[in-house]
Length: 163
Length: 163
Image (cartoon, helix red, strand yellow):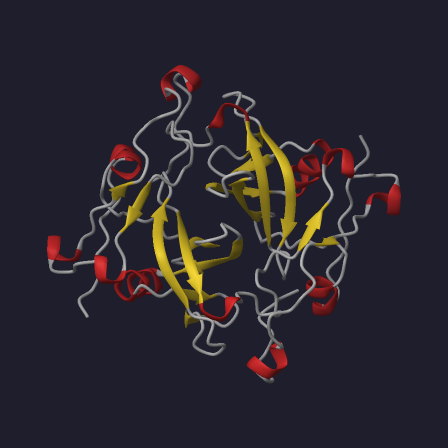
């Protein structure tokens, strides 16, 4: 498989208004990735890629990330089977963020077992009542049905969540 | 206006499966934010909040961010008029990412002038042809119509894009 090559970032006009792919990797060598369901538009997860993960995603059409907690290249679905097929890959104005629009095999993207990682919401504006709970907030569940059992899928692999 | 208070992060179960809002701010004091159009589902922008910006967003129902390039609290739309009214604010499994579903006054979210910051796409999988351009990639435009003229709205304010 031939490699993908990224252009050097030379001018703001080139980055914002040009047709060069010239992504900005941060001081850890990572770029932020936002992954949504191509059909429903739902936000599934937010992750990171290094240059290798971005190249592999472009070449294979399947989402690859860099796992910060495990510090490895991560072909999403390699363990769980929930592979993400990329329908569209977009880049933002200053090219420091990638948007993946994907189809998910099996319909799950969250290691906790939910379809999306975003299954709880925060009351805002007039729905926020600071007098309750001394300013602390109770999250509200938007999804309560797990698509899979994490123990069955991941066994005793360490949980990626860090406190 | 009473303050919002965040819970301390004590256990993985509390963070992933509990109803405490216990966000994880990184070593710069920031949390990643993904902002989509509440109606179309389109990804508008990806930004950051510090604790103050998150509190203000919850209290006012209008999106506040922390600008990394300008290093200031940023009430989105204060300059441009393109205020984002938060319809829903969600948090992810390990609480290191916020999802805002917003309505945008004026319909623009991108400082370059487009509706969304994501107006260019990258060919992937079978659409990627490594033999072209020696592995370099030509971005394809998905939106070519600017909603506003940045010069008119921002004048000679410095461009936030960093090379």
